[in-house]
Length: 239
Image 1 (cartoon, rainbow, N blue to C red):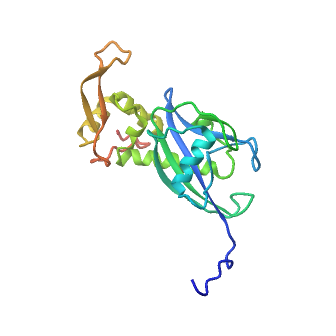
Image 2: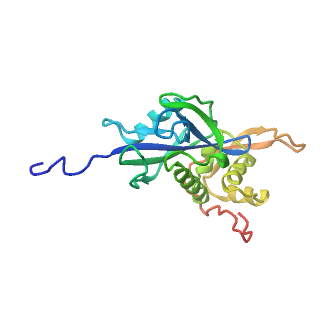
Image 3: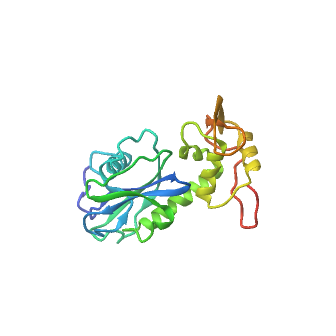
């Protein structure tokens, strides 16, 4: 464009960071990498890296996830943009603006470090502290976003296998929210929400108890919950 000076503004880099969450052994886990290079060599961080000139932020996010963790099969990955982090000084190398993503996996595979990551590991969410850069803040924001979206959307099924019991679905809510829900009330509200789940005809799964096998369900066609499934308040409002 005539009269436009491309050197009038100081250049800066764009990166992506991914808060990848899953449920394992009844606890919320986050995918972290140990940084193999400075800055913050040896510190744990969220997977991510620089966006190349010829790719979108989402393309860069999927590429970095594969390169740093070996997670190449993203067929079951629910990926959505979280927010942009642009505070000056968030990266000691230069001015860096990061587009952060939240990703959910139902059946998390084993991971391995690659690229500039010395190792990759699924770590309990509660132990993921003192991360490099501002990744503590990004992870906290991701947990808050997911917890809020469980109230109004069908996002919880992204943590579940293709066929699941209502007990497994309830465990998603209890783990993410950090609370205990009343089982009959939870079941009633789930089944009363149109399109939330669909029964798998004739399918059931033994759950280890002495009762009859639990019926299996799959994700329905709805994306929003009507009415919402609200988390309990400190005063004890039931879900």
